[in-house]
Length: 252
Picture (cartoon, rainbow, N blue to C red):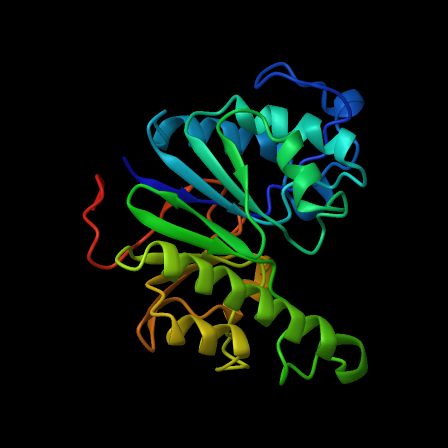
């Protein structure tokens, strides 16, 4: 049993579809062709099927669907559900269909689980998550008046998730799912990273950085935490194994 991750699927099916035979012009509301992601759902499907087994788990930290409403997002959830493995999902900045955790969880097909400011346990590891946010000190994107309260609330939500996880599962390694990176090459610390260090997090997977922005990613072991960028275009649309120090998974 192995844990994989891939984020930023950016699906936009306007009706229930199967894994094959999708009509790109009629079934897809927001094609990603302009970004060079032509029929990227086929690329995700083919590579997912190559690596993920039914007994594995796939973490999907955000930007899963372009849907504005949960009823439409169900089309994208249904497509993901047809792929092998259990799935753990968490929100991103484009998950506009999220109005409440309860409603999203009710929309999840069997074998899929939504976390946001809380945690679950998979393959002997705790997986905790929240969305994250733009980081203070990133002068290109940070606006103090606009972003401060959202940032602090998101840091607090990560703390809530980790407090509950450590209390219930004190001996398990911890993986954190964030959509936004907790640090970058421009911003080398944050409240998110401080909270992860405080609670002894082993690994953090995150997305959000696309194209040239991926050059800003901090990856590998950093101050005791293994960081992995898992945005699907960065991974060439192939789920990647999550590195958990001290845990012997199948492909290591």
